[in-house]
Amino acid sequence: MRNLFTYILKQYFFFLFLLLEIVSFSFVLQNNYQQATFLNSTGKVVGTVLSTFNNISGYFSLKKANESLIRENARLRNKMADKFLLTDTLVYYNVDSMFRYIGAKVISNTISHQKNYLVLNKGSLHGIKKDMGVITSNGIVGTVVDVSRSFSRVMSVLHVNNKINARIKKNNHLGTLEWKGNNYRYGYLTDIPMHVDLDPGDTIVTSGNSYIFPVGLMIGTVEEYYKQPNEKFNNALISYSVDYNNVYFVYIIVNLKKSELLNLERTQLNDR
Amino acid sequence: MTGRVIINIFRFCILVFLQVLILDNINFRGFVNPYLYVYFILLLPFEVSGWLLLFSSFAIGFCIDIFNGTLGMHTASSVLLAFFRPIVINSIASRKEFEPGMRPSISDLGFQWFFSYAIILIFIHHLALFYIEVFRFSDFFVTMSRVIFSTIFTLLLVILSQYIFFNPSKK
Picture 1 (cartoon, each protein chain N blue to C red):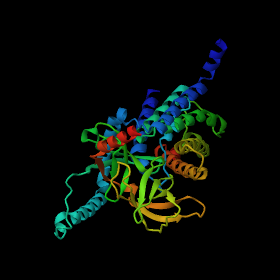
Picture 2 (picture 1 turned 90 degrees about the horizontal axis):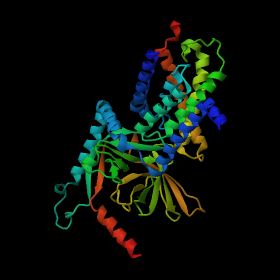
Picture 3 (picture 1 turned 120 degrees about the vertical axis):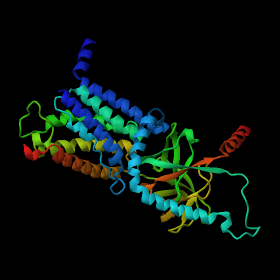
Picture 4 (picture 1 turned 60 degrees about the vertical axis):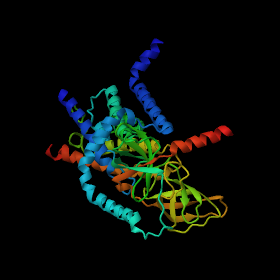
């Protein structure tokens, strides 16, 4: 026993190394399986540092941000009720809204990792909760995975574990949007049934099957369709409509009917 | 001695902020990213004791991880780098004799020594980092190309900062 201790003491460098590696790998595994990102415990420090820096660096991107906001304003103005010819068959009013949008600023964003996250300057104080969708005016961005008091962390579309339900706009067939981790401009639409035909330029939108995104939000367009004669399901290369390298302002989607929908699902499960 | 400790703590903070705030936003062709923070571990003095080397590497990796939300990834590869550092130092021969008070830099030990020292350690770090990040071997060559390009990028920055801050021409 004493010999063992002296041996360990002699080789302490190696054993300390081993110990520290075990600790870090346990972090890695925890992070991989639980998607926990420790924002809650460290959120205040990290968020404050990032947003302070963003206050400075934000000036450099003001021009681009303004342009995209103006474009969106113009589009929304075109959708306003008084822009339409008022014939009573064409106009209808939604009595009850399903989604509410909260604007937020991106204070940190990566695209070069395999698992990319964004940090937004809105948190539980502003009504943000886990599993809310995040979009820009051009398309979808990701899903909220972690919320602290005044910041939230978003799992980007550019995250290898992020799978999003998508729909081909022209024929309403469903598929799954994935990112393989190489080029940040392109993703893959998988699980396309073999009888479906796609052409380059076809639009891919959100399916609305999950309660995260409303139906019909832009995701991207088909770049290339890999059709194999013997495969039941095919893949397509998708070019994203959003340039994830410059997102400055985003909207967080609050699904107002989510608890109602989940309740309905639960009763369905109980009946079975 | 205390002066050295303060310099290293200062370097630690500067490199963490530089990495998190600026270098993480550099994406050459979308996937090549420099990780200059390993420079801190490379520049620790030769006399640093083993436990301090391991713990300070653990600390800098942990800081980067917290900011990136990638817990464990940078920590594991930094500790690996720290483990290999004494082995690499012992195995590379230098034309100059080791003297007490020497720093691992171009000005003290020459370009050739520093270049091989840096490239081996940075490569080990990046290799571990990128393969832990993908966590699979399926896209082996894609990941390998990321490792190689990022190693070149980081090495370039390390050598550049050697010439800027250590002034080898003066000695």
